[in-house]
Length: 297
Image (cartoon, rainbow, N blue to C red):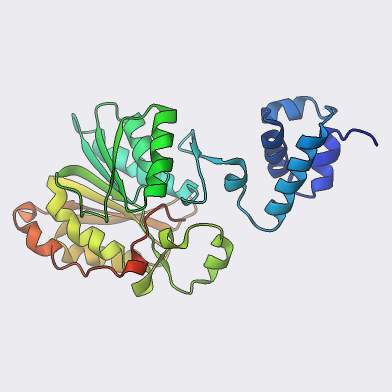
């Protein structure tokens, strides 16, 4: 029996070429560029079998990022496992907006709630050399992935296990969060079945996690501090109302590259920091099923 070649395996996979090439490069532990340059390269039987297994899993719907173990975010490769959501391009808007605010500060203190893979906190830490970045997650498995990414990329981020603000004591210039916001029963969830549902889904039409994050922010922001949250395509109006109720001003929503209203932000109103403890106590406690933390598509 002849030894299969790169070009033959890629064609036989019936996957889009870029996906098939990524899987074969992973099976061979070889750069993708090498496969482009040498399509006639012979592939040993073990690697060919590994590739065929990966192809079968991909064709069944398993995300490419989980199969190859990483996904690029903000120009950097992040390790991902089934313990965390896969970083999405639209979440880069949250990083961009956070940087616009933080770059005007000498030594900004930044809090990332529900860090998941750590992609937001780590990107901010690497872009802001003088920043002090704290990242939280309630899930130990997610924190392990985030810490590994920080070490791999050389980012200075402090990670703690916390149910949103429960273990946070400081005040910050900037708070960012990409919490679970997909409503229960949303038809898109069938396409996300391989990702941790606790990091995706929230009750109250997807607002159950956003409410305590916004209501609790004034107690953890410095004067003129800013909160930015990612949310779903149809949640901007409701999120803006929650911001206003919590005492924020200069509230606005920015659209992602596809035109979807994706990130809402607000500044802490003058004098709000002094009485924010009372406001934060108005947040409804979450049920155990609403306590998952992570990145959300």
